[in-house]
Length: 128
Image (spheres, rainbow, N blue to C red):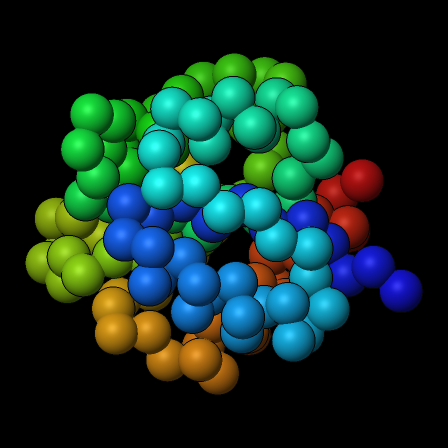
């Protein structure tokens, strides 16, 4: 049984691999992108349930990426979980104000990651 499609956006390849390995073991289908612009294109080309999004990336940061997702009615219902090394309250509040479903800080707690992804998938299924 397919559990859901997750797109992961992070400019650090080791973070992508770590998240991919954890979530594939849980049965999710994973797409990974180190380039946020390519990831944004992929959102339109694939059926995505949840996006895991880093904030600190070159060219297009996570806040701008989140703005673009939430401002487009075609994709604004995708739940975005921010995963960032930014632990300051402004970054957390700003991400949530822009429409993030949840916020995880790095280094990630694997149990929290699994629970938040499961919650996002469940909420999306319940709103279909």
